[in-house]
Length: 266
Length: 343
Image 1 (cartoon, each protein chain N blue to C red):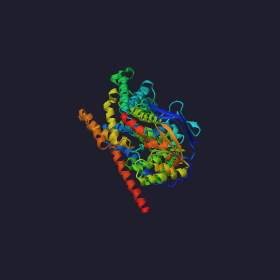
Image 2 (cartoon, helix red, strand yellow; image 1 turned 90 degrees about the horizontal axis):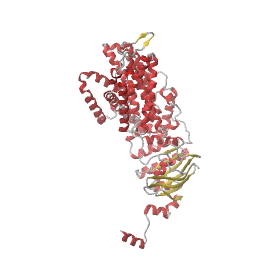
Image 3 (cartoon, chains in turn orange, brown; image 1 turned 30 degrees about the vertical axis):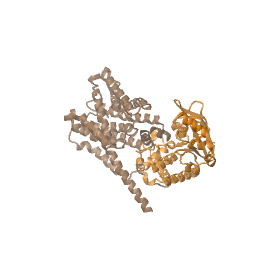
Image 4 (cartoon, rainbow over the protein chains, first blue to last red; image 1 turned 30 degrees about the horizontal axis):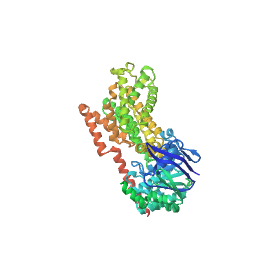
């Protein structure tokens, strides 16, 4: 097992965003996390990646180490890469620089060596640029390498966010709504790219997604959250027919007595 | 990643020096260096030699400010106070403790670096205008402290700061001093070039744009904020020390007011915030304009303030940004053409 989340909770004042969630992710697995808006999916990602600190008692064990109290950069250095729902790419940096910053945890030269401009720094930088250009090729952005990332379209930005996370050479890749706002053609393209990268680099992937096609076609297991709690978990086909999941997404059908009571109350 | 496929020889080599061997690419640099060596002989009089030194000292100051403000995005208005710390520390080391310039300069630079690290601590919690206010308060405190401390001359000023000695001869002449300031300015530019073209520069830019996303990429935001403040303070300390020991060897707290800070900010904003040559270009242009408009000093701040506002509105990345955009577009077209030809 690569990631084990135990009794994880997060409160914002009176609101319980994540409530006592347990999660086990096997190495090499593609896990989908679904749920209506406000169900705590992104908060769960923020807890795992260290953006938020979990409530006392919760545990996040990654590769055998409890990372719940670590800072985001320390968690990233341990091999957890993520994308954001609102992308958060570095718009004023070039596309290539966005990927290079993803490689930051693996830079081998020290700040002092960089400051004096030692030859090995430039040799490493050239090697890195070659490697990142290759990665840009995977996500189909080669020709935009030297353009500011802010000039990319939304679909290209999503691919860049994926590329930046991949540049971190992660063990665990967490994708927060990677297909949001994409056309059906671009959703297919993104799906293919993610699965290709997963296969090629042997990644473990957790993906939050509202587009069911993405979840059904890419995930082996799906976890469903509602009001911060885990309400179901299983294979995509089973989850699709789970009555609790249908209720969470579509609401509960009321019988006649309930309708009369509702009308009277209103 | 399990895959460790070998690099395929990509096309984007821009921005990475080709190595230490001399090639034709280095010729313009060599020509520039020779021109700088000969520059004092091409300028007409002692006053212009003095201005040359001021330009180079401002280049060091502005390059340092560009690192913390332009690249790391930390809104500091206390940089001029760090220059004051460097200047007065160097003056004390030399005039009070009897240390030679060659020891006082690095000692003052390191001392200012340490003060810079302390100034950087509020940046852990403060951003934008709040950080600007905190650093402004700190800067004014330094100036007021100097103004009331008799040991360093208080409001009268610190005089009789010894000049550098070189093989037993004092370097009082501005042309001779130029040959101390110019190499130091070049070394400063070289270091900034190395820092900003490496992973450190990228980390600075990342934390400027989005500290949270930078942290998610593994960048230790606090460490890099402190590093930016410390490096820029080292530059300010060096520039301050050079100011102190330049003839006539006199310092006054009024040389480090908010007015001087605005001038320094203008250098960086006009040259290009976050552009590698921004500090250099801005310092040269603004120092020359500052000198040419001295007769209208009462309007200088109004003019400089207006230029800052107009630059931010219509040329937010300064002169350097315009140059960057031009080359980025050229490279995009070149790569697209190469792809079309290959297809």
